[in-house]
Length: 297
Image (cartoon, rainbow, N blue to C red; front, top):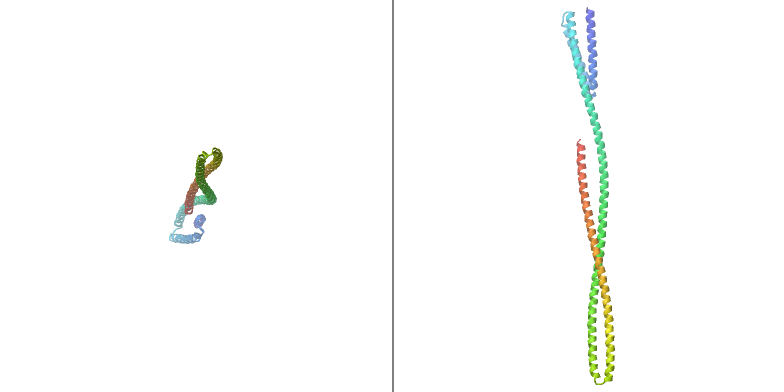
């Protein structure tokens, strides 16, 4: 019977040892390497202490039956404890599996977020490059339109100066024409007076009077012809000046219309540039907010 009790004790001890080792291996597989040695040391001390307690308890018993009953109870307790440990290990493994899945999911989401952030940064750099290109093109277009406006303004001012000079010349010619008309009127009056004097003197001498009358008529006819020719020349010059003035006025109106068009284009480009600046500011704000959220995450 002592041999039988010894076999049972060895079997209990062997089973307990195997179960404890399995539990320890399962626990060690889920613990961190840093805590592994500490827990092994604690487990070893605990096992040694349990063995000592069991030996003390067995030594305190008198009969083999009592020792066997105590060993069976101890074995039953160890089996229950082992079952609890296995349940704990399974629960821990399940939690570990869930944590591992969560970790993999978080790593996947993090990789996606990093890739998305990289793509967004690339898109933002491309957007900034395109915005800079559009900005430079807009500024160049505005400078070109400003140069055109200045050129048109200079041409308009030059044409206006030419028109002013032409009007001044026209006024001078009109003044000269008035003076010439006055002079011709004075000459005609003088000729008439001379004709009257000669007519009076010719009353004394019919033949001389006739000759002087013919001479006066000839001079008068010549004066009228010269006056008519001069008047015709002045009228032609006046008509030409009026035509030139009309042409310059039309050119002036065209230049004014061109200047108004250029000013409206400059205003349009300026508005578009302001809208572009506002869109760029909003884009930078959105990117800054997204970048801040990405950095927080």
